[in-house]
Length: 272
Ligand SMILES: [Zn+2]
Image (tube, rainbow, N blue to C red; front, side, top):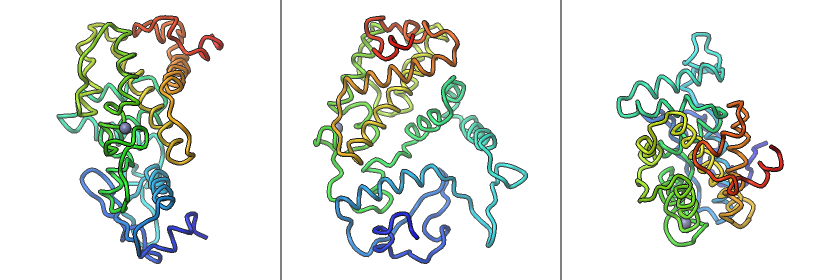
């Protein structure tokens, strides 16, 4: 039984194999769906969730009766081999050499993969769904209901998220306009601090905040919840604090990036 029966019923590709509803491009697997009619609003949300789930699945060109994970000589998938493959992709491109540090951050792998997808513009934002042939009646950002939702707007320029970065910048006495491109936005802090540890922890904060923004955005989309910047900030700080346990020195987690103690997450204060 299909997991998304409503989408399945209006699909023109009900009996097709995976390799006929997408293709392998230079940037990775790209889906190409076909529907019998335009999707209704609730179906668009289903499609977004469906694509979000699909994004977690690594599609490989497959032989007739078996799956083969080419990144491992055994043909079997493993997280380790995926990590190694992504590292090779990262280090292989000259323009992305600076992003190697992303993979060296001491944060959970799922957050690293998320940040990588954000930087590579592979998250299923409304704009990206459109490019994947999902017809949308409205592609405006649901946080501000003003401009189209793409990664640049959603994470860095939306009126609901930009203030979060302003506040973050104030912690390290910095100001200025964020670069539009997510990659350069991530890398912009390279010159803010000559101290490597401090710069790395700022990058951890960058991942924690973008990750939390995405989680809260999905609650707006899928659960009709409201988006509160203060809650996002608190959850991001808690996430950073949680990750800091990996660094073994909890007290350094926020002070190392210049965050005043008074700004720390209330939950982190309770736990520390
Ligand atoms: Zn917005």
